[in-house]
Length: 308
Image (tube, rainbow, N blue to C red; front, side, top):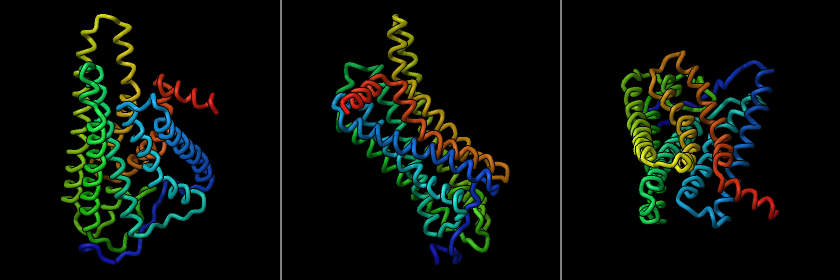
């Protein structure tokens, strides 16, 4: 099969996390629990925000988008990893590899952009509360969410096209548990230095700009909080941001570490460990972070359980 100047190749083999049978069973059980917790927790938040009128606010609109995204984000990689750990089937077709890489980066970049939109929402709510319902009306929220999904899709499409226009020959073993840009590019039989610089540059534009916008938002929030005389009011205002800040550093911080460094044998190994945090652990703990640190979500969940 050919895409661009891609040499005919049937598929790849994902090396996964480990070849030791006992560890494979151990990791399978651990990651299955995280995956099920991810699906249950994020589905619960989406349903809760949908059916509870008190949560029909901009902040929870973005949280619902984030949970919906996390639900599918892990699904692009974790089921295939679990299959490899349990039954040893580590093969993935060429088209399957393209699809996995595309959707992983599509959903991943969209999450970073949604987190940026959420930081803007917190900035307006704290620094400009009187105009909050005007600036963060239904239309504005939909436009911000739609822009996040659209930019994420276009970014991922560009990265996918660049990656799979390279020629792939006989090397088939991907040093990862899913098809990611850096380990896949390493399998090309062409000189990939320029391609690696290009994909890193495009990633840097998206990741650094989103992270910078979040930092700027919180600089304005911090400055505004310092002007609030009441310590109780400062703590109350900042408490609405702590869940978001935690997720930002867990997700975007790890992503920056993974994709902005040089591609070496050691870095690929480190990336594989970091990817477990991004794809398995973070999506599973996000619902816990938001429910434990958010009174409205906790109260809504208690009401729903009491009603049942």
